[in-house]
Image (cartoon, rainbow over all chains, first blue to last red; front, side, top):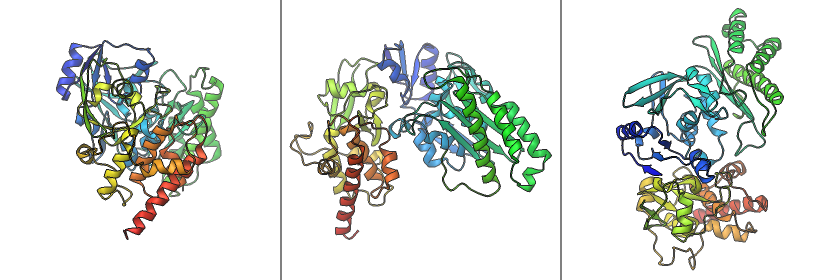
Length: 295
Length: 199
């Protein structure tokens, strides 16, 4: 094994071009587990810790550019207003020690359906900035996940940052697990209201081969809110609409039975989380903030 | 490969480090610092918690090569670290933490601090003993490092703050109540000290 320690982003891209099999390591919270357990013996480890730029974020007028290695702790502490859904999801990641090291780049690189950031990223709608010596490209999050633990990146590319729109409405995140800390999601659900475009976006974790959106549920809800004049009136959402939204969210799942839960349970739980998070975000939109921001 | 870094205020050099080796392995097997415990090797248990440039991390998930040029504090150096902090005004505001600068300037003084023996205990260590928070002792080093960092950030934590800060540390004796007592005790003693200074 070789340990590559680029001091700059350009050096990192050059190293990845020369050794496309090199495994990038930033927080190490996934990669080191695989090495410790002898599940993986990469030929090259590509350490990204020396590239300071990856741990920084910029809040622009309409978007946030979030460096791939910004630890979840920093997202929780600094970006709660701009990225409320992602901040909530960050809070459910593992433990303080892990949140101090892990970042969104790792979740995206690993592309596990259980990654906690994915539902929030899908719901917010964002673009992943990836780069190689061949050039830079922005991959829309909807096109990023292509299979079980597979993403749309080429072998010589590295994730530099994620560009997320600043929240224009309430966002929520909910996750089911056996306890509060150190839990890999049995399933998870993210929702973001986008009042400016009068749309709703969602994200489902751990209930399909990849993180997915519940598109039919989104379209149904957007139409129901529009037709009923709810965006203007701020009236409560009728239970029948919430129920239908939940059923469509359940229907968007394509889960499996595994040690963490059964497919049937996952479908059921996603429906429940969809209904609840819709209720929380809508109450917030109507001006009734939840007293405790927890999911 | 060779890795140069600072452990408990001392420059260290580790040779022939395997590229996939963890910081925890280097500390325990190469530096002779077995205080950080090796249990789950997957970040679940927190027994290997150390400070990396002031930040609490699971040392089993840090690749040795990633600590090149950086500062590590283990439970063996905790008493000195806490003493140094107290001498430099500590953290009364509840929000300051340890800056990277401060962590890098930090030096251990007593000659025997490397093993942590014969040094005065840090307030959190003393509180663990006084509260009976040590049973088999395996989880204790990780909990001490995590709890010390909590009190550095937040000198008057609520029960929820304590639970959150220690949520990444497992105690298989399940002695959590006494552990919570110990953190409360250390916080209360810290407040008394500050009050005594009129701050």
